[in-house]
Length: 421
Image (cartoon, rainbow, N blue to C red; front, side):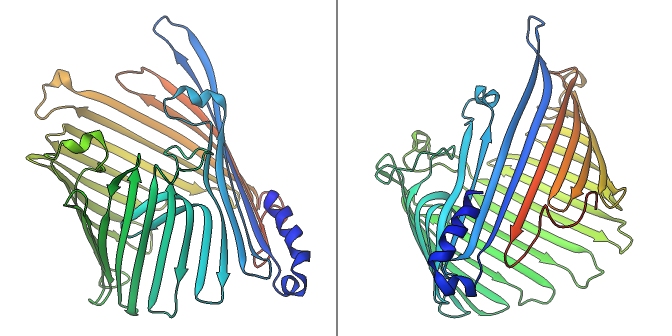
């Protein structure tokens, strides 16, 4: 609601320019509550109810159309704070974004930067320059936000973060990119990654993406990633391939960086999925994990049905053994009521070729309902049950409320339509 008031305050000050381009705004709210019981070693039973609330909003087209404001955060009750590292309040984003002409865009505040070799929450500023459809240049700088996204600002002299990215798209089939970054922690250089990426659909019926990142401080390839998708026609199976080869995420300032003999992590995934217009189909998946001489493989097979799937997966290797049956199903009972359920039965052992007495069972069940009370107002309810070697019975209840509303270029939310539509 603060964003709404901010829009109305700025609009008169912008005169006819603001009238020519009315401000648009949107607000969203998600509230979730968990109810469950705990029992300590002495047999004392405690009823618990934990809740958290996610708020988000934006206002665009204000101040003559060049300014946008965005913010999001989360608030939880004090019952959550008994967990180590869990903050009662978190601030995810909060920034001003300004457009200058058609080529320049600038941002200041807390923002998520996900570009090339950079992936972090930044307290600082960024600028984008797009002179034409082919080129896009971006740069950002400031301080890395606190790890737990608290309301404290990052300190530039302790957690400095700078970076830039250039992408070039000669046509619709190719996109090339180069990026670099500089990070400090505790006043020392933590990383200077450089990287490149490529995306292409030049091969018929195929999409390919590749990315590499090299850390100049630790003198190693931090990450090599490749993935491809092939589909010969709209009715043919979809084939996905993915490969990742990366070094454990340890910056140069970390105490663990002295262990330079850490083994690289390699992951390989392949899947084939076929779904007919009737929504029946099937999926076959392989996932392999390789860390030094240690290997682990998982095979999965699923049958697709309208509204859900039923499947089986098997894991073998040095990380232990596991076989799992699972199923999930959801159905729109009416225009305003959706019902769903899921469950899995899993038998696992922590080592390969473990004796039968070392095997453990884990059963999970859940049933949920989603009620569309009216456009922009949705209620969710869920019951969860867990049975494992530590808990003979663990039942939890979840209730959630989603609220959304927008005005301006689009109009949606609470005042649109009637109840149960």
